[in-house]
Length: 146
Image (tube, rainbow, N blue to C red):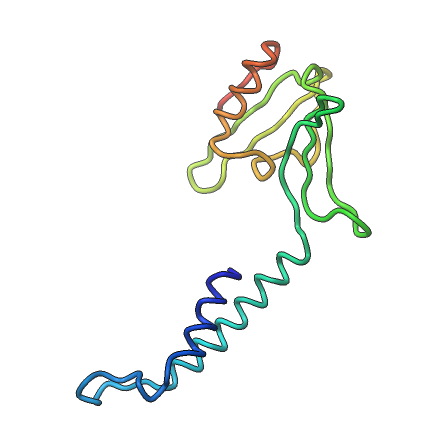
């Protein structure tokens, strides 16, 4: 969003509104240049604000503990939604395919409890490949597709 806004802002700055006509001069829309510039500024500022707010989501393996760590939203003063589990404590990963929206991904511990805040937003797509790669390293993990 930031990059597209920056391009439109730049274009609105360098294009002469009077030169925004065809060769015959009949089709002319000089008002489009300032509109593009201001819309670009709005998009660029919105994108920059989104980046500055730092809404993190993702997952990684902690190199010290070997835990799978996932997080959503912000860290810091406002807190975030985070989870952590060692792969030896994962019993299964369930992937529910939905035709009209994003697939659902659920992670369960050895007690059968679903792990909070773990979903398709925190792992890379395709989800099946990610889950199969994890199960290849930890053969006790079951991968279910529904």
